[in-house]
Length: 245
Image 1 (cartoon, rainbow, N blue to C red):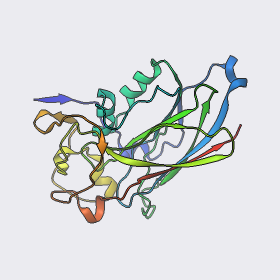
Image 2 (cartoon, one colour):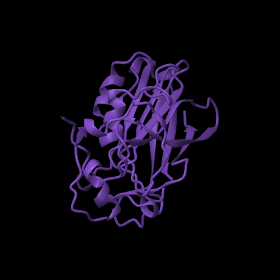
Image 3 (cartoon, one colour):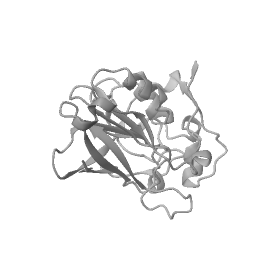
Image 4 (cartoon, rainbow, N blue to C red):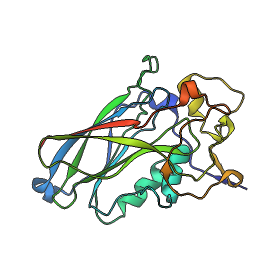
């Protein structure tokens, strides 16, 4: 049985979109109590494009994923097909969430020659408050079945700056078949690999797993994905945080 999923982002159409979308901001009356931060997300992988980053500032216990626990339906959508819409909707109604910022363009691998017109690094501005000074982040590793990069509830620095690193996680909502037929279509075009498989925007119950978030084992290279092209070493993302206000 196949369940229809929300359409994946289209690499070819979002290349021209350069603006960052701020989805949830602080009320104007609280502006004087806020701290502002610049957060730079850098793709460190040699062969994995990342979907547009999703950054959230929140209270200590208001993150959206926890390693070792069940992946939510919203994390499944992000990890399997790069769709962050349902996760954003969930966060907008969640107590303790302050600011939600999502990029509009994917981040290419660090060694990309630049022919795509995309960057491997991008800087975002987020707000925080005294009781909401935690940052979480997630992006899909595009050329995986259900892999994503993320940090869970990292405390923002009160002064100066801080650098943290995001690991690659496996949502374990789908087996790692490494078959283009089971992976979102943008993977092939983003890496420049041709195939007769069109990819898919549907979940397949036959290859579902237990849904417990774990560190991703990496690319084995036993099918369409190539260890020499698509693999990585942890960490996969560098996150530089600087307080600007």
